[in-house]
Length: 132
Image 1: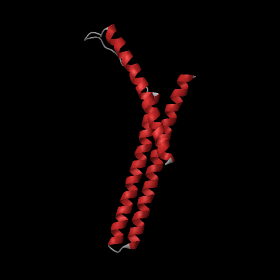
Image 2: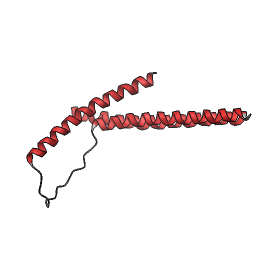
Image 3: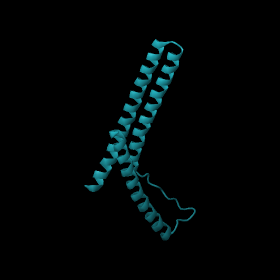
Image 4: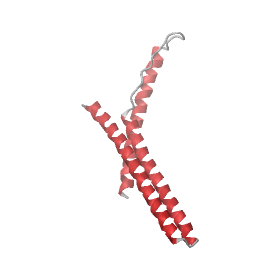
């Protein structure tokens, strides 16, 4: 329940940052359109922009949620295989299948959470860099 509350809060923060950036990009595009477009033969070099704060945080939340979802799928697969093995009177194989599913679920959740926390930390770092 706590994890759901934390992920929900992060999603709401991400949406708020994304809306603020979208509005800024729209005003930037309008000012460029009013200034005029370059000719056909003029070369315009586009700078590669760094991901924004909202994009980093949103990517982190997505990675964490993806890890949790993949882990849930692994756990469900292990339980399903274990139930099938138990129904066919293979209790040792059933225990092994459930254990394997739990191990894969733990790995998937851990990897997804670690990637997500890293991306969220990068986004928070961007936000602090803009403030200071």
